Image (cartoon, rainbow, N blue to C red; front, side, top):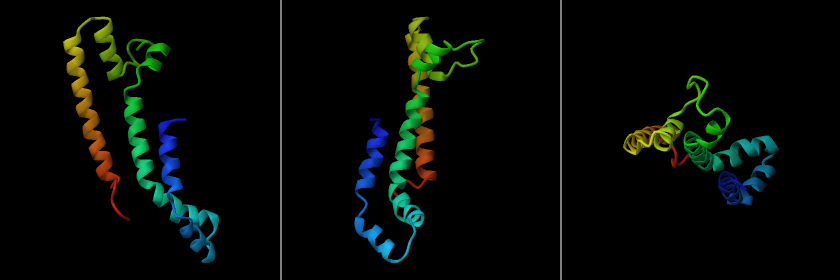
Length: 124
């Protein structure tokens, strides 16, 4: 089971049943309970899951290398794949390390921007 599913399930299990019961007594439909109770409660878990999944996919090298190897004409070469090629094929470990540092800084910048724009951790 993926980590992201476990994260969402754990957060979903922490929602108080009293909220759902009170909404049902007030006449809220299942869709309204989902939109106004479940989804807001899962908001931070969804934001964190999408961020972690994005970082995971950014660094995904094996699938691209297996399917295309970066070709044709280097059209599918991503930064992590290029780093792996520089280290493994060209044995240029210093350049690969510098590129990895640049990739880390890019991911850090976009992660901070994503968390700030999504207002991660803010109380609604």
